[in-house]
Image (cartoon, rainbow, N blue to C red):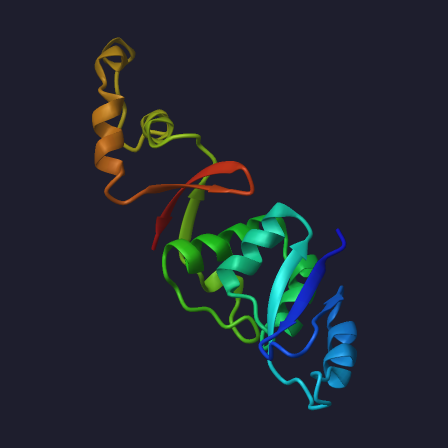
Length: 169
């Protein structure tokens, strides 16, 4: 998907510009001048158009003129699950992450595609997390109570319209 950004100068006497890639940004930023002919050096980078997941990725990153050169290629290189992991880890769990040097695999976040913590409780029971439960007793399991217990460690988030359950490691 094609991305579109806007570089808004902090200098109120200068005009900003739209760009789609880092090369275009550097060319236009190098020639940007305010109404007095002075070079404009600082810009606020705004995510204008692209996929919803990339918009949330940009927000979690705190997109700016320093990290835009790393962000643009990652929107193509990273798969959807990697972007989601980043968003949850940085935006929800508060992890620090260096786009240039860190590996996405370092972010310790467990992600489940269940639609609620109660559904996660059912999954855990079915997978045997609580041991073997005889079939005749399965009707007496209080999934809501298990879900309340799980909600101490697990949280819900909606990312790009998809509800996820996650746990920060």
